[in-house]
Image (cartoon, rainbow, N blue to C red):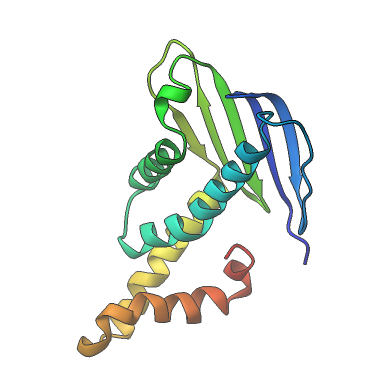
Length: 165
């Protein structure tokens, strides 16, 4: 199954406007300092959010607000706010039916981060499944590994979730 993944950027750092459809293999050609590395970094960030950050949030039983705060934290780690503080921009990442939207208005200090209902639904569903899994698989000596067992059995082997990870 080919993944449907794209990135839409407006006025972020050196990129004035771009729509980038991510394929299995991508070749980006252009002069220095025109945003090639920025595109790669944004894709890497969003893929990390969809996979690792989402799973960590499930493991910690975090709320939607906590999950969004983690996205904000990661974004600031990758792109320190002094690089975009006084600018307006929008970035939208779509992966299958999941979407993350990050925007900033020049007069505001904070980022606006939104996740769509599909991503929120997966977050809630995985949290509920993990709580149930923990109740049914209590083993004192294996508690440290229970989330990774859950990930393997309930996520990677489940066609409803495996396409995202």
